[in-house]
Image 1 (cartoon, rainbow, N blue to C red):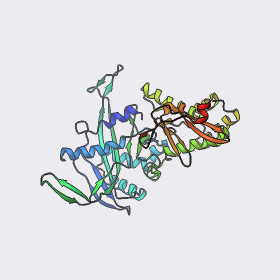
Image 2 (spheres, rainbow, N blue to C red):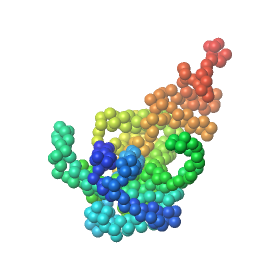
Image 3 (spheres, rainbow, N blue to C red):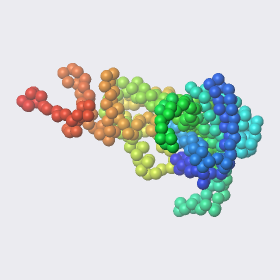
Image 4 (tube, rainbow, N blue to C red):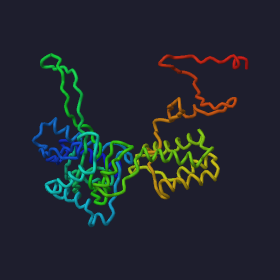
Length: 384
């Protein structure tokens, strides 16, 4: 799915847009036991409460593609006869009215996913009359030829609040507020089937993870039985290791500035051009950057080999998982320096009298603990 398709489904989670009439759900305790189930009617809720439910579900379609929103694909045999796919289809086809399928899904999640607290499973099913888009981009609401029926699942931790002193407006008094259980933002969830090409793709699903470092592979395996994608943070760490190990002594400030600049430039161009398909790079992209920096061919070939061993020969990675476009960081065991990525030219490394230094050009606006300071030349510099 691309960003436009995700955004189109996100807009469904408003009281005036959705056709969701019922929410199925249950609570799972820390012992992986179902402690309660519920199935409220959205139409009978107070408006504020309905908006809270829809807002929570909507967050399952938030975040960055490739980092928080991950495309999952079923094998053909799974679609034909796979147990996991059959269960998801039973939930979708019955519009969550198949009690046996709903309970089977609850049990599958409960037995395979354990969070640090009690958690809530929310399940909804929606039918979306997909508006037809003319060639000029005009949306024709009355010209739908596709009904997209989909499931959305949100898994939300339930956390205990702390007692606090609270002000009661109607009484104009302060009283102690007791601890209470509150539903947190989704930790994980999914959309099935995927909305590809603005229609249902029964071979795909869009999986949500709040954490870029832990996408709960046990849940992915249980619900979809597909190989879980490598978490974004792990991709970045692996990429950093590939660069360091393959370039060896040529892994310099200049080279890493060039790699960071190139990847950030691709991200900015992709955003500026408003391209629909997600941006991804291959090992060839980075190889060209390394070659342009004058890295020896031996080290370039070593990079290609280690990249292939780590990610796969033809694997493409989203550059947002490898660099932070808003930050360039230099770190030593004792000092961390964060620099505007557009001004990495202010940093350089140098060896002076045998000692290694990181130099930062600072012409003006230098502050120490919020206090502006003046940098005065040394006596030696004055003499020169």
